[in-house]
Image (cartoon, rainbow, N blue to C red):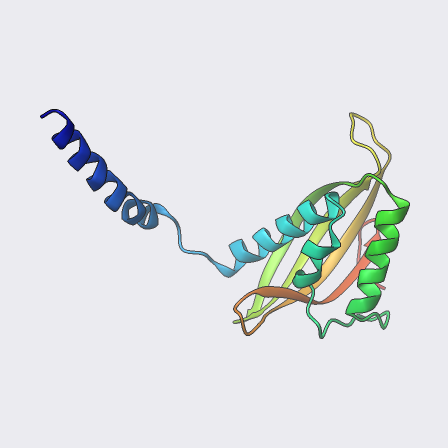
Length: 153
């Protein structure tokens, strides 16, 4: 007899929990999606996982240096071979939506070979242009990076 009310209450909780949780979550914004992409890229880079980074870069990627997506993949492979350990600290300085589906982001990235209290850190500034693709996912289509801070040359 005690089992039936408990079972009904558990069934009700199981059926309503997804609805309640869906109602409590904030709708995704383009800025939140771009921040999630940056976090995913950071995690993949620290894991030295090119397979997780590759889909974040658009096939149409190009930059002022003349690099295309395969060139960026090669640079990442070289970095992962050269640095057996990668530690990043990323600070997103800004995300600006130029128009729906087009955004520009500036991120400051501290890179170190080792973790610790006083690692030898290189600081880079990344200026990134992102487009939302046909699958409604953000991808990097252009990037510029430089050591230190300041305006691009």
